[in-house]
Image (tube, rainbow, N blue to C red; front, top):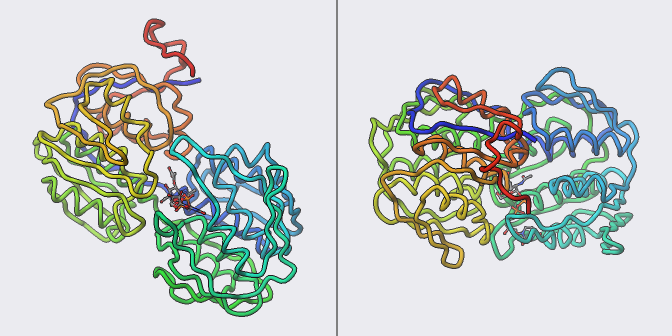
Length: 434
Ligand code: EPU
């Protein structure tokens, strides 16, 4: 296993580009099961999660061809309805195979996903949505059995305790595009990744109205066809680079940063004192002018609120903002695995319920730390870039699930970061495996 080794304290300067969005690509890969014609997908990030999804599609009978590092052609001439535990357990997002299998085959048997380190991950809203569309839903032996012989359009309300559901919306949408009649999804998620999925489905011949809003109207069609689709840039990767510029008090221009997708982060960064400019709609430049940031309060919410996937990185920035800031999680209330590791680097953070209360300090100090999940890992990279001294991050396979070679993208900006085999790490610093 590899580790990341950083020497912190250098302001980042220059230009960097975000790749394609992981959370758009995953449901879009699943959506290729809705047609027997080939679908070409471009600007796909080169990530372990994407490779897992490709393996699952192959297992289900699709032919999956990788044309180059970032383009794939998938053709599901025939499809099987069973997605087994040993594949699904590797990646929670495989839950979004249910909708396409149901739409295409009128039946699906998909392993029930487990929770994960960011907290419980229920799928009650997905299943409620399928049931509303006339599907029989049964959980048996750890599998969700879906019988959709009577699948048809209906009104479906998808709001839950924590607001809308991204993959739940994707799932119901993908079943509905091939269900006879009209489906109306109320309280639909409007994340840019869901909008991207709608655009792909429309290019395949689906009839969807209200794209980008909370009320979607879908008129089922009999058949969908192949198409070519380009994945949107990853707003979370772009946001992570902006926060890297901020925490190192640097000057970085991020391409693939669509302003409308990052409005809540831009707003908070401006409130915290960043000098932001927008050379074009897809590019954001952040200049910190060598100053620390002001503390700000942040609440995560479904889009267009502040993204939960940027919460850990924002916490890292606030550890160096002199004063008090409160970061509250409304989407995944237990998503604070990064906090104990940031504390090991000298951060002053207390957790109170679903909030992190952060007292900004003048500096962090480098330390050996453990990545626990994808975005927590990104927060540790940011903290390590700003900290005095050396930071070693273990278990970076979490980072590789969602960031394509982040180390190689940060080096041209002036970061001292390297990926090394764990054997290169001083023995006395190696953390215990849980
Ligand atoms: N929820 C329910 N019932 C459901 C579904 C969700 O109560 O049936 C709750 C969840 O527990 C949570 C909230 O609704 O409190 C929102 O969850 P959502 O369903 O939107 O999350 P998701 O679709 O499973 C996607 C991303 C996550 C991202 C969330 C929120 C993918 C593959 N995953 O998950 O991304 O945090 O939306 O924006 O798209 C990541 O990339 O690091 C990541 C975790």
